[in-house]
Length: 413
Ligand SMILES: Cc1ncc(COP(=O)(O)O)c(C=O)c1O
Image (cartoon, rainbow, N blue to C red; front, top):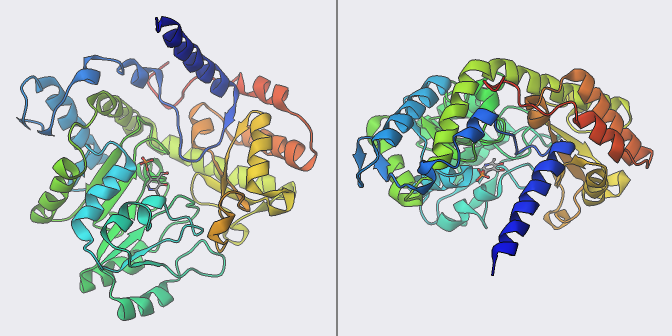
């Protein structure tokens, strides 16, 4: 009776695959997995459980996943040059919650990046931090809005006595002041957590600050934005073994039970891709972002961060308030086959959230399918035609994208 409905869902999946394969995808939090990574999904692991750690599980039948998970942990520690890695969180938010639950007590003051300043919802009152305390204070920022004001933060520290500081954000153009804040956090017993969800692949490829080397003891991340997927989370740390045991309990049983072995296996494959191609990939991602920003600026767009070279990451932020705002601009681009998200910009009131001033663009996915500087130039040109010239370029976009179908920086070839 329901078979027709199943066919309908299958057709929708097929439609999505074909549609997004024709689009220029610039959502900064997404990426595509290689054929080899997709090839290990849908295996028997999609049906199994493996609670606990390799060699110390609660169920029988886990020998093979034990080997895979053990290798993945070893490779994560190698990539990020750290003492501990927990690969069980099933997303970046779950990784955050696992750590926040261990460090934040009711009433504690926690310092975070504001929402318009780029902070992620899990750092806020309605998200994971808000489950543990309501005393959430935004970092002061410099007038450009994209950098934490370190001197002012130092003054606030004395007055507010925070227990936790969360660096890292979702609108993330420039590095955070880890080197400046880590020593004072250590002296004052403040847990310094760096959320690397967006920049994990750039850190792995040595093209963004290395928060662990700069002194952040705790790093969380998503594995599917600038990292090569699948969609999961990770916790990385240099704390001592006793402290790590606390975090371990936060990951399991604190924030998950089964940890989705199918995507874990996929991540273990993509981590080899990162080990082999991560440096080359991350270098091109950042070069592409800088190039896209520069070209958009040259065309007359208000690209954020101009006085600092626009960006040091995979992201570009554009103020489109003069062009009808982020919502209208993102919809128009989508109608032309270019997928982006609207974004609050620094200092905007929160009630602008449904039509903020900004667009956030990310170059990581289009870099993964082989685009370089000339293609960034072409993409900037499409933006100009669509948003400034009010032209339809949907067919041109489709034709342009059709030449970039294979995932690069992988063992697919
Ligand atoms: C800074 C930051 N932290 C955490 C997350 C959450 O990651 P996930 O979607 O993997 O739960 C995001 C997602 O966009 C993010 O931008």
